[in-house]
Image (cartoon, rainbow, N blue to C red; front, side, top):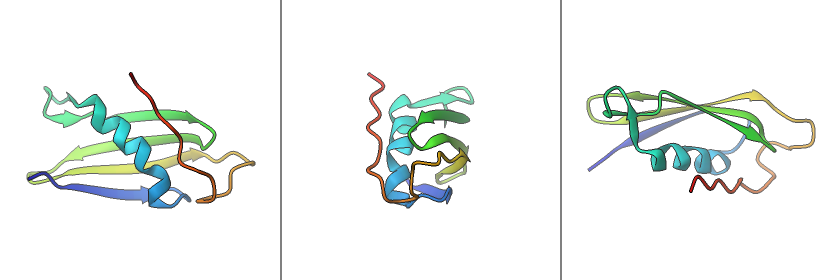
Amino acid sequence: MEKIIIENRTNYRTVTILPFIESVLKMGRISNNKRQYCYISRFEGAYGVIMVATDRNKKSDRFVVYQDVQPNNALAGDAAAPSLNLE
């Protein structure tokens, strides 16, 4: 059983940032000799710059989501979540 911890440090609702975390999860464990998800991922778009940092604990993975820049035309939590396709 896997456990993840999400720390949302943005002005957006958690449901809005889930696609960013999903994208990091889909990349798989690519850092720390393939034992950890990408240390930090940067996404730029309608939500400004969103960064997802990860940390590996003994029994869980932690995802910390930061908002670097918030565009003037986006209202926190009101817009639909972005569709992120990494394929």
